Length: 297
Image (cartoon, rainbow, N blue to C red; front, side, top):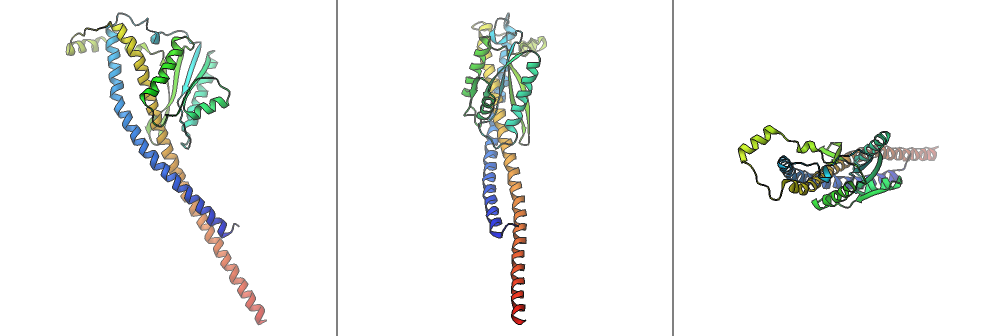
């Protein structure tokens, strides 16, 4: 059995660890509230962007010639897992990478070549350790992404797609549902689906009745060509914000569980320490009684 002093040192160590995990839980909770606010603030912008694109597409004679809409036979797919720059977030990074590798196996089984670009230091280090060549590694901003970060990623992905180096781009990220639940989401962002721009005759008539006909300057096709990259940036920014909120939610939950486990461990160690102290006291009493008996014999 460990001595009382050994158990005291271990209790002290676990208490210090619990202070750290509790502080990390509080910090993650504050960051989570900010991330949720940012998601709620950008959703109206994303919805309005889609409405603007749809209206412009309705006025366009044709959208077939736009590079980001060109759908071709998929020979090479690009997978973009969105991970975190830091750990201590439970299974946040592991479930993204596990899903990305499962997607890779599925695509290869269909006869497609697979390439990787990655967001976050954790994903980049894992892929490099497995000897994957990366088309891009974007890191240093995952806990607080900005729109310029999404622009940089979108520019690189659009460059690979329009240069016909890849024929499909799939982003894998954690969709935030609650601090306890994050759902892995797989989204094809290139080519941009023409279904998003599909003509809805009833909606078009209602819009014209309410707002009247628009005069586009320059031509609708040129406006749409400028809007599509912005839409791509917006979708990536949404994914980054969802991932950031999911990361903080996962970290807050993981640190809460760690604090709870530390408390339970302290209780067990305290009980063991009391038993060890009682055993020492009992042994001392027995030694005193034995010494007294020896003197009186």
